[in-house]
Image 1 (cartoon, helix red, strand yellow):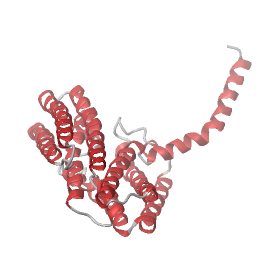
Image 2 (spheres, helix red, strand yellow):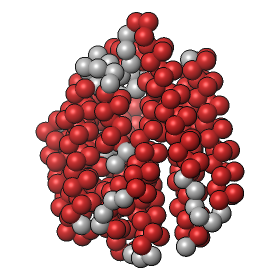
Image 3 (spheres, one colour):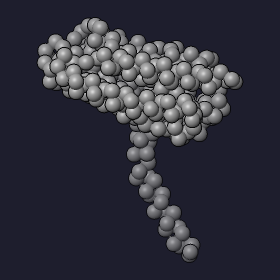
Image 4 (tube, one colour):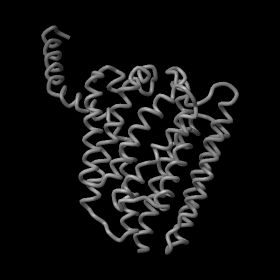
Length: 310
């Protein structure tokens, strides 16, 4: 290769970097918000809003938009602040070392400012455009996730239980936004998401257990109690979740809902049993995939049939 050609190629590369540098930085800030997590948060928030609207006979498109936007802002702020707080630990894990804050592509102070701004704007927006209860629930989720669950991850495996409480809040936010109150039906949605998190997270924790150990996270206990812990935290919540989901039947379309729920539950349970027996990365990955499929289908089925029943 001639020197002239090499210099031309380098100049072209430098020009491309200048042209796309802004978009790269933008993608880093986008990644800070954890968009893949926010997608699931928005789905469960929507289901809570939709079922509450079906219950009281009033559906507001503007109300739904405001609820999802405000929730997205708070969730994005929470994700950003989580990456700010855990940047040094994330840098020690292969799975998270390339995150923007951990890799140093976004300065810590920038992540802190953006996270606080997103969370504050989202909380205020929910309070003004939706209602105070929805805003309080979103703020409570942020505070417990960041300042209770996050530090506990390096202290005790019970962090999984503690983290499930704020993790199950989105359907309550949606329900509160649509109705201004909470009731037993909202509590059932909360319980379903609360229980779903255990097999979902056990699959992740087992797949990346060496990473978590290296970074000093105690999401799984050490020694001989690790395997019994994983089995218990996977099967007990999973069986309870399936039992609750079966009992959660619309007044009409009961047979359709029951059959579909049983099929979904059987598939999820099969993957859970396979995981606790084999305890391999392949089985853990299959359980993780099953959990990601199970929850949107279950919530979506419930919302669809409940709306048709009214």
